[in-house]
Image (cartoon, rainbow, N blue to C red; front, side, top):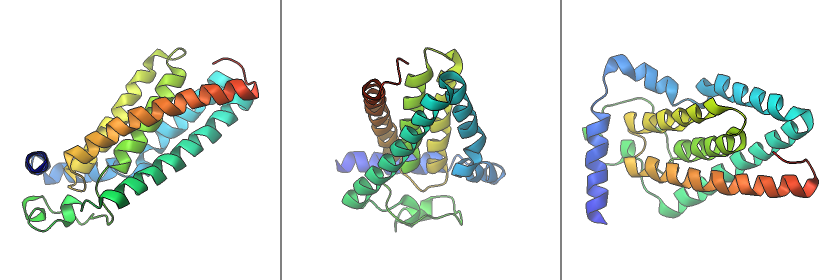
Length: 189
C-alpha cells in the first residue's frame, strides 16, 4: 500500500508540474462548478425535449436526489478516510505549483470526479438511445477531474476512484430510475 501511495504522490507532482502560469486561469475556471452551467442547462433541455414535462420533471427531481446522495456519500468517505489534500500536506505541498485556491476538507475521493461521473453516467444511460452524441458528455468529468490534479487539490488516485465510484453510482441510479419510473407508471424510456 505504501508503494501505491508513493507512486500516487510522484504522479501528482509530475502532472501538477506540467502546468504553467498561462494555463492556470483556465484550470481555475474549469474547476468551478458554475462554469459548467451551460452544459447543465443543455442537458436539462435535452431531458425535457426527449421526455416532455411530466417525465422531464420526474427526471430532474431524480437528478437532484442523485446529486444530494452522491455529495453526502462522498463526504462520508472523505470523513472516514481523512486523507489530507496534497496542497495542505507538509512535505508534499512544497513540490507542487502554488495556488491561492486551497480548499479545506479531505481529499479521498474527489467529489468533483465522483459527482460529475455519476451524473454523466446516468445521463448517458438515459439518453443514449435517443441522442448519439450524448457520449461526448464523458469529456465533462474527465476535464473536471483533471482540473483537481492540475490545481494540486487531489491525488490521481482520488480522482480515479471518484471516476470508478461515479460509474457504479450512476449505473445503480439508472436502474433505480427505471424501476421507479415503471412503478409510478411513467412509461418506457
